[in-house]
Length: 200
Image (tube, rainbow, N blue to C red; front, side, top):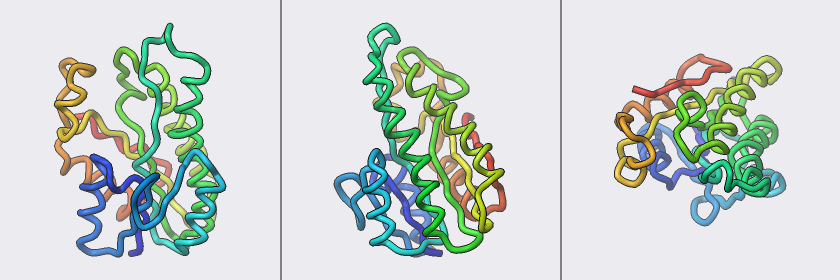
């Protein structure tokens, strides 16, 4: 397969890209580095990327940001960081990317445990993750051409444990192999409209 991974140089993306590269043609898109440059906050940037990249069998997004802060300190602009990037960025990837997928292709989005099990300072991120879960289930009812759409929702991954452990007291770090398998299930399986939760 020909697979596009947006965010393929990040903590999770690097491992996912390495796995799929073993048996597939993998191209990486990122904001500053990669085979293609893209700012997912900008729908015209997404369109330009796909026009340059051509057709794919699978699209994986492991990108998008949201502001972490105390709720009383979050401004409307702070909320819009997550709304414009992680939420609408991924929504637009589906809307635009479906036109650059081979029949029966797949799109995999990324969220996280905060949608179901939030911790302090994550009101914005939790809200956005939950919205993506609802979006995936709803868009699956309408998207055409046999295209499948899923989301992978992981707990705190082991490779980021030291950096984020103070935010997630008592949470068990998720082995990277389990996280990779979530993306394999979405791309190679037959699931559609699924939120693939990897929390243990």
